[in-house]
Length: 298
View 1 (cartoon, rainbow, N blue to C red):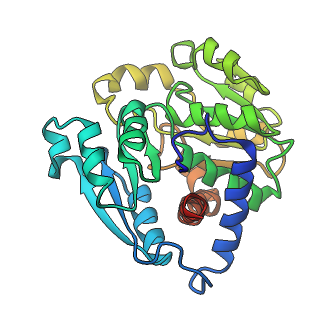
View 2: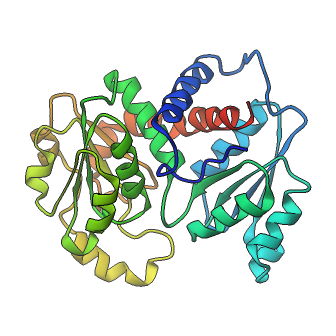
C-alpha cells in the first residue's frame, strides 16, 4: 500500500510520475476519461486551519469521482485525547483514504500504520510535501524545467516548507539556497544527511544573485504565535522585494505558498507584479493533489 508521508521517503521516479500525471490532469480538467475514486469516501482530518489545502483536496476528490468528509480534530474524539492509533483503526474500517493536516509528523506516520489505508501528509511541523510538489510543477510550467535551476528560500529556513525543499533538492537536479538568520537555519546534520546541492547562509545579498526562483513563507507559522515579536525582529530584512529581484536571474520567479503577509516576508509590490505566478502556484495544488490521489490508488 502506498502513502505520501514525506518527500524524504518519496523516490525521484515517483516525483516525476506525479508531476507528469498533474500535467495531464490539468489539461483535461472537466473531461477526465477515468474517475479512479468512484464509490470511495476520503477523510480530511485537520488539526490545523486551512484554505488552499482543504479546498484543493475536497474539489480534487470530487472531480475524481469520490466523496470528501471533512473532520476537524475539534469535532471528533481525537481532539479530546483519543490516541491517533485508535482513531486510525476506526477510520481505516470506514474510509478509503485519509488526508491529514496536523502538528506532529509521527501522528501521520502512525495513522498510516494503524489505519491501513492510503494516507497523505497535507502538512505537519516537519514537512509539507504536497506544497513542494505543486511548486516544482509550477516551476516546470513557468521556466520549462526545474533541472539546473537555482531556488532561493528566504526567511525561516528551519520550518516545514524549506525542509521539504531540502529533500526535493537532495533527489532532483537543482540548487537550493536557504537565506536565513543563524537561529532560523536548518540543522547542519539535516543538510549533511540530505546531500544534494544545498547552500545555507545568512547573507541574503549573495543568496539571491543569479537565482531563478525567490521563495518566501510566513515568518510566524501556525503554533508559533507566542514567538511573534521575536520572530518579526529576527527575520526583518529577509524579504522578497524588488531590489533583491533585480539581483536574481532575468525572468526570475517570485513564489509564495500563501497566506502572505505583505510588507513582511514579501512586499505588496512584488506580490502584485508576480501575482500570476503566485496564484498559479496556489491553483496547482489542485492538479498536483489530484495526481497524488491517482498515483496512490492505481
